[in-house]
Image (cartoon, rainbow, N blue to C red; front, side, top):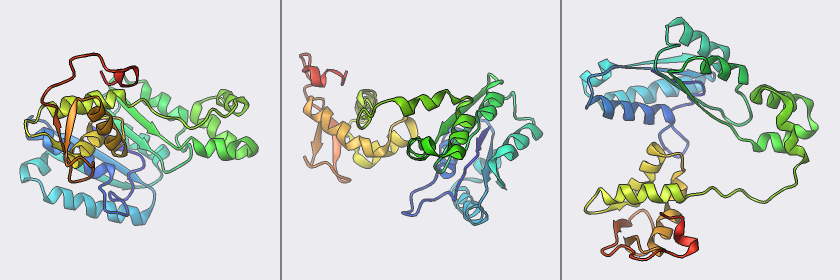
Length: 258
């Protein structure tokens, strides 16, 4: 079973699919190979977004066969995610069964730690939580209400120690794992992969963002691991394995590629 607490409208302003639509397509692709059934629970508090989400889910379902739509049950619910989502999951007997819950909030720390503790009681349940920590670092230090939200999100006031830390500059994620993942994905295609293919793969199969793909490809090319045609990396670029892979250990800067 798959559940979302902040399902949104199912589509972004620029037309990109939202997580409910992406999840449905992933499940549909898997069910073409496995004789299984899926249940999808989508919770959204905004009535306008609920209406659009229902429309987007009907559209994605219309692109699948009748067999697939019968095997993926989708339920869209209007309401605040907490405690409604937990009550719904408990009511249908989902707790204790294989369950993935996505709690991708729209900004600040909207997800109480007590909810995560309740879901975490079940070994077969996995939860992914995202929120913008900048909300807390910008507003919570001088606002009691915002600090309380942080306490509820982290389960204690210990997180407030960040206010005593000196700024250390902008955080830069380590993309070495992404480069290895993309290299393996490219190696599976004799004709290489396009940048849009790599971005979609990063979105659906990794924890990295599509925006990090181009720089990762550029670093792979500088290490001699791939080639790009044309050289300029854009949406029309095709990335292929280099005809002759590096035979020597790359420099310290490039060593993290492998």
